[in-house]
Amino acid sequence: MAKVILGTNIILDYLSAGRPCHAEAVRLLEGIIDAGDVTPVVPAGCLKDAYYIMCRHYHNEPLVRERMDAFRKVVEVQALTDEVLDAAFASDEPDLEDAMVRATAVLLGAEAIITRDKSSYRGSGVPAMDAVTYCQSL
Image 1: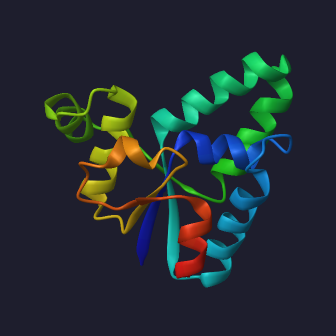
Image 2 (image 1 turned 180 degrees about the vertical axis):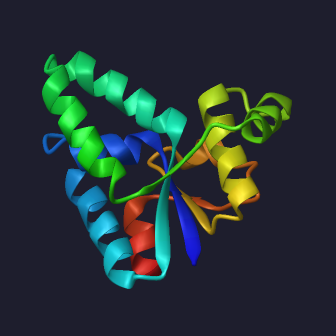
C-alpha cells in the first residue's frame, strides 16, 4: 500500500475549520480514505507540533486533545526513531522539523509529502505537493 506523509500545516488545516485551506485538507483525507490503497502517515513530531499550536490558538486543551485523538485514529502515526533523527540531523535541511518529515518520507518510501510549504522540500527525493494537486492524482 502506498504511503503519503502529511505535514503539520495539512494537519492544522484539517482540524481547524476556520483555516483558509480547511476544505482542501478535508477533501484530501476523504479522497485518500475513499481510494483505499493509500495510507496517510503523520510523523509523531508533526502531531505534537499541531497539538501545541492548536492549544495556544484555541485555549481549550480538552477539546484539542479530543480532536487530535480522533484524528490519529484515521492516520498512521510514524514514530520518531533514531534512524529518522540520524537522517534529519545529517541532512542539509535548514529546518529540523522539515528534515524529520523528509527523513520519514524517504525511509518509508512514501510517494509524496503533502504540504502547503512545497519549497521546504525541494531537495527531497520524495515529491512535495499541496492537497489539491495530490487529490487530482488520486
